[in-house]
Length: 283
Ligand SMILES: NC(=O)c1ccc[n+]([C@@H]2O[C@H](COP(=O)([O-])OP(=O)(O)OC[C@H]3O[C@@H](n4cnc5c(N)ncnc54)[C@H](O)[C@@H]3O)[C@@H](O)[C@H]2O)c1
Image 1 (cartoon, protein in one colour):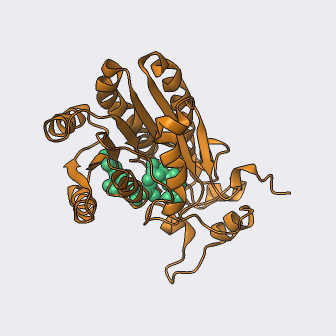
Image 2: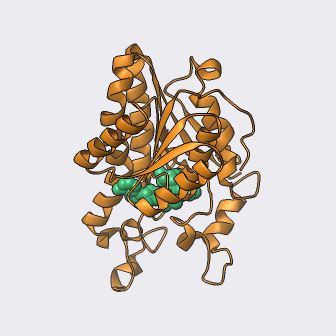
């Protein structure tokens, strides 16, 4: 991945949660390439270390830190490690998130017949624990790290938070009610936090990726033999640009939002990067 343009982040410290994952590993590398020291936080320490090692091997500065974004003590511990090694956080990218099959219905819509089919996971049989897991991972998992990592920013009077929302924040997607509600909450929280933190000099924005084929949605979008599911065909038919995004497509908007020079008056926005999906009515 080569960054499409460079911003100067030398002397800055960035924290990327979920940085061991597909989209956030690429975003971590772009931030590092612009000169920031990057802490890769992830539940999977091995994945975080792998990304950090790749950044270090390419001449950047990064480290992997084990962290559960749903556990305040774990986040505080990660912050301690961060401050000792790199100094306090200037840029927070809240990337940890995703859906889970436990919070996904089998059918797009409900019909009377589905009541007689015990094998089908309908809205009525969704496990509250599954709903809670997905809602918490995306919403609380963005809020709790923000509580910890923006304290130093608020005291210094300068900082930047980027949240990761989704298409389903604009309009819910079928089958995934908890993920849709959680990402709507992330967009709402982005605006709330932008207002709350403006006097402290912290800008808060979100990126709303469209459809990117990654591990979290592979089962919904591809068949076991690697073909596209009917849901994928629907998505592509509803995407004016007619393709899935690639992680590199996120980088331009990410760097623009982080840069105080070019986006210094931009706060409280949610930027769709979706090939036109959110703009298209379907007609
Ligand atoms: N893939 C898409 O098409 C798409 C679209 C819109 C939004 N998003 C969002 O982008 C973000 C990144 O998604 P991705 O597709 O790269 O997913 P991914 O599954 O590759 O990455 C998510 C990372 O978060 C980590 N993680 C999970 N639970 C955690 C926890 N409790 N604490 C710390 N880390 C945890 C995982 O280990 C993983 O490395 C997510 O917020 C996702 O909801 C993805």
